[in-house]
Amino acid sequence: MSEFTSSPLSSFVFKGRDGLRYAITKYLLLVACCCVGSLGLAQAPSAVLAPGESLGIFLNIAPVPNLRDLGGYVTKNGDVVARGIAYRSNEFYAMDVEDLIKLQALQLKTDYDLRTSAEIDAQPDKIPPEIRYVRLNVMAGEDLITPPDQINTLFQNPKLATQKWGGAKGVEASFVRLYRDFVLLPSAQKSYRILFLSLSDAANLPGVFHCTNGKDRTGWGAAALLTFLGVPKDQVFSDYLRSNDYLLPMHQKEIDAFIAGGGDPGIPAALFGVKQQYLEASFNAMYKRYGTIERYFSEGLKINATEQKHLREMYLIHGRGVLGAGSIIGAHK
Image (cartoon, rainbow, N blue to C red; front, side, top):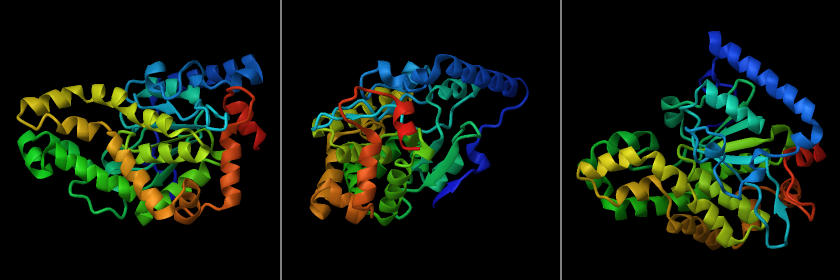
């Protein structure tokens, strides 16, 4: 399903003291923003971080270590990708009231969920009710050996998982096929079209897109957008591989238990982490089918030249330094 929705499964309901604490903190944040003025509003929280660094860790939001700003990278032409407009993340399922209060720093307007319906039903996002929630099922047309919502269950049986998946090599081969489908699958093309067009509309920004771990479906989405904006390939891959820094520690207890239970020790990194060969599979499929990133956007995603130009104008800063969301979004209203 690819649609805008305000499903109650995706809204965090505050009651009693939690509700009062959330309301008071939100009010104080609004007062603080008014006091610091427009310059303060223009400064993204990630401005003090290097591109690709974890905002989840910086803001002390433990459930989302892979929450990151896509901005800050310098393109081949010397432009800068604006900060504070688009974020990538892992799922928002484990959020509590304190986490959501901290999340207010990003002033998010839209949450794009790239997971399957089964994943969402099992672990729905918990977000403030004022954030618009968008479901984009990238893998709706994918016939998976092990659906994402069943991976954790199988992972708890190390020997069976090793046998079913064919060891680390089998897992890697499955991900390579999956990454090709991120480019070629009709449901993926439809989802990424909606995502990128929506991310070019100032009314929806700042926005965050995510899947379960924020590394595969989210990884291709981030890599495709950064490549389209002109970020050099080495920086795109560096941004992609940083998911390993944030996700593998989060899954360390599961990894240790899996190996101790007799599972192939190479499986956890192949499953919970990312590998360069995965993203290369997406790019290889994209260049083989379309030739250029622009043709992928125009022919694969049906995003025309005018829409592509607007997307670049929205995200690229030309010789004005690294600004945040306030100035860029305000200019497009």
